[in-house]
Length: 71
Image (cartoon, rainbow, N blue to C red; front, side):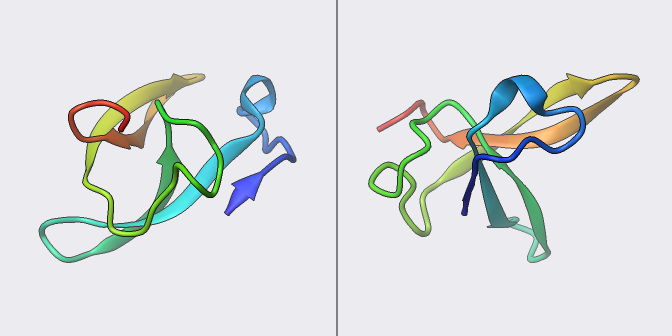
């Protein structure tokens, strides 16, 4: 899903991609995909991702980038 509505803490980053990411260990989590165009053509299913952390106020949240850079 691509959101054009800013959630608290994300006001300067819309639109942003929201994804359910399946970790190698098995669990799934909801997060953002960054470092790639937020278009349906660029955000393909089952793409390899790597975790990164971005500061949001007093905490850092996990976000995911395409592994090895954007395709």
